[in-house]
Length: 270
Image (cartoon, rainbow, N blue to C red):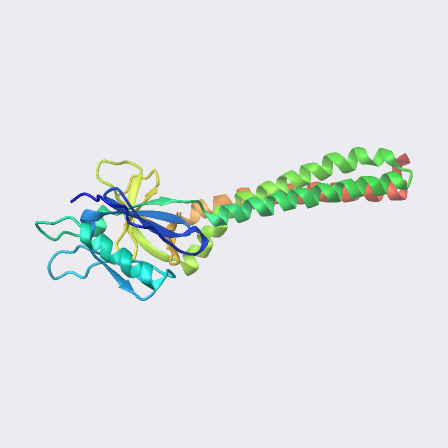
């Protein structure tokens, strides 16, 4: 059955929403958008200020439910009645969760990392400029030939080392606080693996591997945020490389401070 009249969209906090688009429901959450074909929907229920989208399920199986909360109660009831009126007829009940797909809307953790990197680069640059001004003010301007190269070299490797350590830090966090499951290789794919979240949505993760399954961990509050769990040797190698970058950064910072001290003390003719 086709939809001949528009159904008003439901809007929630922070840009979230639920609307009918063609022959599907689009459920927009803070970090992703779910595409739910109408053929996968058994019924829509209004539960106070929450709309529950119950998916189809085989006889005897527990149907999966997708919920959208914090909406006007009257609007939720009207939306549920309007969608139920246009649901297509199904000759048999199938597992509707297999029809769902999702689109990530960005990773807020990456945004936080970029903000920290920008602030670190700004504060580091200001510190180097302050050191140069201090050295020049003391009458030993020649010392800046040590302060500037050492300072910016150290700043570069400190920022780079901290930023590149994010994947390892996120893997450690999800190992401790996330949900670990086995993801199976998708049929006909070499680098795409599939895992199921608690709501029955099959999600994908990419990894080049020779095995049929890989271990992944996802955030229970955001099941689409997932990491592939690496071997201990791979984690050790990553830690070594990141640590080397941070050590170079610290050495550069120490060189900048040394240059400032040399300039202030007037050592070596500076």
